Amino acid sequence: MAPIQKAVKVITITLVLTLLLSCSQVGMFPVTHKHQTKFLAEDTSSFHSIDIYARIPDSYKGENLYIILDIIPPREGRYSDTLSLPVRMDRIPYLGVDNGRWRDMKWNYRNNVKFTQPGEWRFYIRRDTSQPDSCATGAIGLLIKKM
Image (tube, rainbow, N blue to C red; front, side):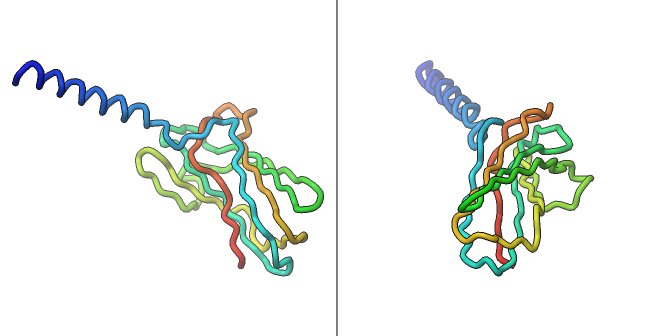
């Protein structure tokens, strides 16, 4: 192999490895990030289910994912709920997929919820940074379904 071809090959491999390593944090949100979900409540007589989903790095060694859920109704008030979501597969029945880099997980938060005020409800999920095993996560949010 000619020296120029060898140099091109080394440079190409170096660029590919650099690109792969720099993309290893794609989709990560820092612990301080607030995830927002908006929900337009039009039918205040219907019941809904609310699930929480999260994409957790496979390297996460904690037993729980600690979050704070802030709920802001359309007109007035603010509610906060501090949650400890179990992430160890042997502790909970959860819908999860482990692809070797991420664990995609889902927990049931509430069933038979009635939204008492019509309009836009806002939900903010943030990590509870007072807990020792807080780490960056991938996507996290709520799934709200009419029952």
